[in-house]
Length: 211
View 1 (cartoon, rainbow, N blue to C red):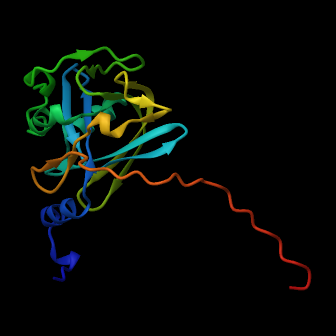
View 2 (cartoon, rainbow, N blue to C red):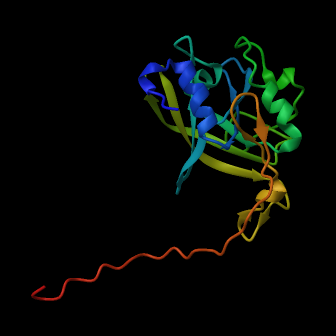
View 3 (spheres, helix red, strand yellow):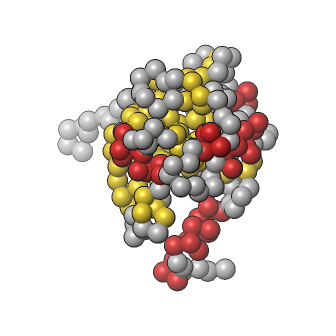
């Protein structure tokens, strides 16, 4: 099959790409409006973009050309929390994707417990094994639909006890969920560990005289 990208509308392209770029980690983002309403939504266009300072990037789309609640809140306050949910939270993560008016809190609607963050005003969820307090650093718009790639600096990592081993997250113990095409999710499944590859700088030798 051959598909010309120019023949697809934005929704068709989205449906195609979300089946191509798989599996995708899910950023479960909690933000707060200027009125104090807590918003919660999942974003599977998500990655890290820097390790010093640690920064995460999420792609936040628009609805009918207007920013969604998450985008509005982050731009208004500059603060948000990115959570990584495990398999026990898949239904709550999925249900938090339902769109509600700005005055409705998905956190309250789903009956999720929160705890105070340390360095930002937005509280974090108590249940997820990982929560990262973030402050907005960059916002870049891409494409014709106005989607924004929001990059935030992680100020504090909250990690469930027992998940960090030798400075690394035990991914199997974390049991994260990922997004596939449509309303379909997956867990890690079988994993394969290969030998570590040393990261070394390559030295460029100067050319010999006369060569």
